[in-house]
Length: 247
Length: 354
Image (cartoon, rainbow over all chains, first blue to last red; front, side, top):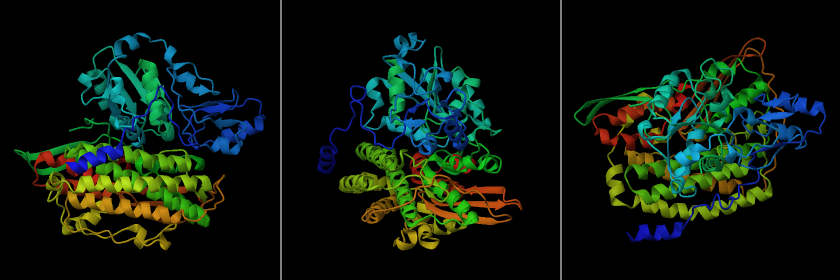
């Protein structure tokens, strides 16, 4: 008992102050890409060719965060002159086309489904479905329950049954073998419900683009309300998206 | 049960054959995570190979990336410099630390001892953040590329890493003491989910699960890659073959991994970062690579045709061997011991389904 109390005091209070204060993230964290448009076409082409995800659109000089895995190749090749990753973790959007960006994202709080804030702003119960991903997105959703992020203090919880849920959070590229289970889970949730796509796999197929075993984007089979990009999205990205979209 | 489980975890289907609450046998049916990764390896452009390897199993990013990178390096006759080898070793140990700590947290949660579950959860995050410190991603994605690494270990990063480890090490020790000295925890861990050494050998269990059942095999000792040849790794073998042994192995390995990293960052580490990897593979060749990731032996096999294109790529995650170990551990135990046994193995679904 004494040992338990001693440890409790040593651990102290660890919960971060977000959203009041942004916690510091180590400098190599990449986050939101910022594009400088006044660079030569050759440099844009070199970045586009080297990009393992083919996420760079040469004509519009934009980067598709839905395909991007934030590996930093384009920043390295252009030496930060074309693409610079700003370290900003607030990168989620409510429309898929907004993910094709030059660094300027529309304010997430002003999305078109404001009634969600009234419905779910005080209590949001989510059912997570892992559908073919690599388990990194799941891991970084799980950590939202740890003391540092403490998602439950905002009235948001992950629940076991879809019958208890207000929506689903989908990770992974929706493998052929998980599609039925995913759609059944979605059907089991009562209306009105929300669908959140987490990670580049769920948004576009991500690293598995082109595989015949996956769905090339969750929005092709379900109406997605919120897109959280990343590979995997930083827990703070998830936290920002949930708080800004629903609060 | 499944494929959709109660928690935020991967999908799989478990069938319990029971008499009352005693489990006769557990049938594990997987395949829900199948993305045809192996096929993608020989159909996509070479620049996508590292991204594919990183996403075979996200919690084993470094383990799988290393196997892929070493395979390409072997067939292009490239040797990474010493600094890159050290950074790769540090990254693999950081991955081991974060996952082992997470597992101990989950184990304490499953025996309803919540203080260490929360402390380990927080400490796991601290170690994931050390991977982020090194390469900008909490799982080490983007770090390993054929030919070396993409991020150097600059002196300021080395110093921060050292400071954090120094701060975290005693905290870890105290939480370990809290967990392992509680008689209620010992009562649940000991004699639970025994897989005999004989069974383990027949099934070919690897990693901590194998070592807990008396199989000393550790790739870091027997087929040293990267910088492991110069590091003394003890034989972490236990003989009690139960959940306690699987937890205790993790405890030992956590302390060893912290020491390994601390010894590697004593001196400055210099490396030439990789910008463009060489994928001109030698023709009609065959290579097998092995690494000891946190779950055990990861192995990749690559076969090239006479034009140097990849003809066949085979991935073997440690979970491939160990899922059957979980089924064995459940035989003739109460069904209520399933979560505890499951966490003591903590196997990968996507690494198995590929």
